[in-house]
Amino acid sequence: MSSNMWIRQIHRWLSIAFTLAVIANIVALTMQIQAAWIGLMAFVPLLPLLATGLYLFALPYLSRRSEARS
Image (cartoon, rainbow, N blue to C red):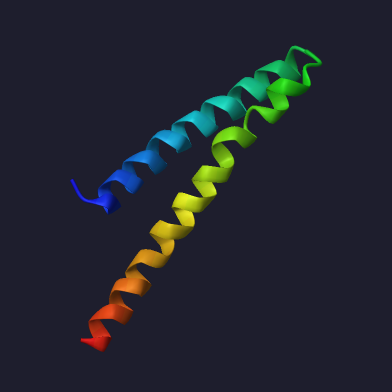
């Protein structure tokens, strides 16, 4: 399995974790639970999700550039 496939798979699982954290935050807000850690829980998968997303976004442009050189 190539590294691009691993990054794509990690990105998918991180997006699921981020979605669950946002849902938990919304549920906590509707129940009026004042816990700061619930709000910050969404930031844990958000940073690596941003990094993998930017890599996957740039991947077609980088491969096009390397094909033009050869």
